[in-house]
Length: 203
Image (cartoon, rainbow, N blue to C red; front, side, top):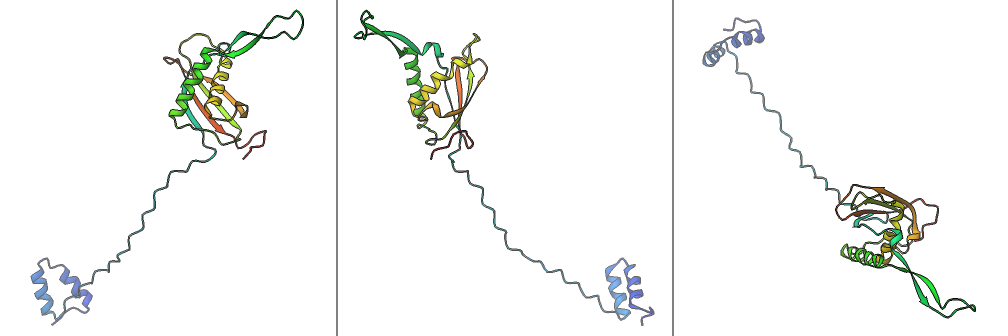
């Protein structure tokens, strides 16, 4: 016989019985069926999410800057030498020789050194006809006073000779900065094609 007015009251009484066996026997005497087991919630298996592809390295573009390091150049004052060449005088009384300006031995050696370095770098070159920005970060070999404006010309001519660009007249921007003293001296070169220029970029 079940003395409880409602099933809820009976369940509250049964919940206070700690021994499960006694609780089950009491439930049977009260004529109460065991509470149905609550089925576990269905587990939804989600399909694996596709793994995003890793971004590919950007392809080289025409505006990619060229960077490399070159030996310290001779100054503008030392890359040229004057020599006298025999000639036929054009005017009576004129000397039988004429002065010519030639590339000095230091200038020729520097050109060869730059050419060999560029070849070792697989001969990088700028886009044909592109106007250029040139940045030279100059690290001198010692602390002697040097005029930075005397250094670019030998390097520019050497890069022209090495085929990095068609001619140094394509340079619209030139920046020269002084770096720390470095044994032997060196120049860090950055060449960047310009997208905005006073001149039309030829394709």
